[in-house]
Image: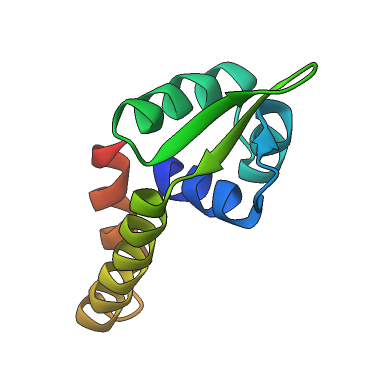
Amino acid sequence: MGIMGDILNVTANGGRDGIIISAISRKANLSHYAVLDKCEKLVEAGLVESVKNDRNRVFLITEKGLQFFQEFKRFLEKLKSFFGNQKDSISIVFDRLD
């Protein structure tokens, strides 16, 4: 799905309370700094919101982010139907996007 897709997936599953960077990092299997950098880009794009609570900064997917992620998943399904089981072809496309 690619790094950005993984992060959007994790934040979408984070619910209304949001999710902290360390949890995103763990669930997306990425370094803390890689996640922080990508989350900042998603915030700038309006797909994710950053909120400071008592002790932590949490990230929540926005309505725009949720719509984008749903369309992204549909696009992936179309690619899979086009490429079949050629996972490497799909991975190459998304590795270049990240």
